[in-house]
Length: 384
Image 1 (cartoon, rainbow, N blue to C red):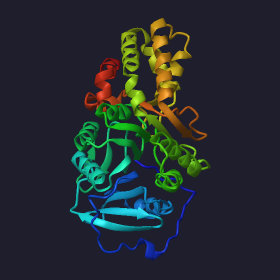
Image 2: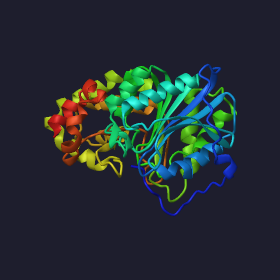
Image 3: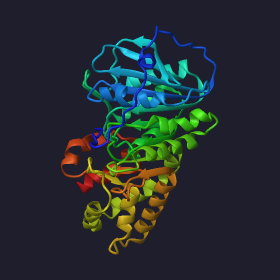
Image 4: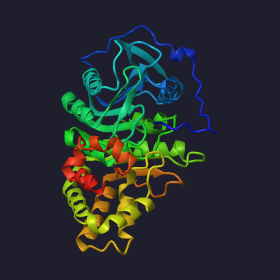
């Protein structure tokens, strides 16, 4: 869930003339291809509804117009029936199409959204932002009207079936900076980079103006550069008290996939040494950085370093594999911004479910591609 942060209130005033949508204008399906389309999948069909009009839309309105950069949102709000396609440009916005009410917690709706955006707004580079609640690999995009949410197999199927290459997949949602999510995106073969937070995201969400103004000013920016811009913009907005428990990272999804054998080797050796090192593993979980709201999500790189700092963690092959694993994670993280309370947040968490967390979510973990491909699911079964 997103986190409410008290003590700071960011208010953006804008003219009523700018926020009043005009007549419906059907987008031109044969539109000319531009450099960038940045599209938001806005699931406000829950307690985040007010954050769309109150924060996200005003911040998007601050971004300068550029005919080579489309900024669009598909918006589903709890208090209204139907779904609106909104175009945003240079301080104004308009509803350009309306659709029947949809279940934004259904992977089929996410697939429809990606297809619709890619068709109506052809571009050289596509950024997709999922706007809502999140909990890593467990779920994202909770729709209260339908009482449904998107799970990883649904997300994967949605991306694959839409068959549109996503240069940047980002999550304006909590706890989605997760190795399982990044790997699931990799297995589609249709995602280049991912942006997400290890921790809860404040109700303000993404500071879209700080994040996307650079590409609006220079449409030639590459996906990697835009990812870093997003992390830098996040830091510009949140780098002050009381926002001391937030972070964001940009991850090279293809780099994660290229390290699959590294992760398989590490998971396998962790499993092989479980009988001897169960106490060491337990101690590491108590010492490494874990997210404050989801205690089974541990920072993967810090976990590795915590294990390596223990002199009793002495198996030569496992130590070498752990060192290589940490390097693979660090190399895949293009940029990370973290605050004073989270110095060990390196960009990606790993789910180490145990006790109640394993009882609640462990049976579903076998549905993650990461859990199956790396053998981490089998490790967790025996660990628990």
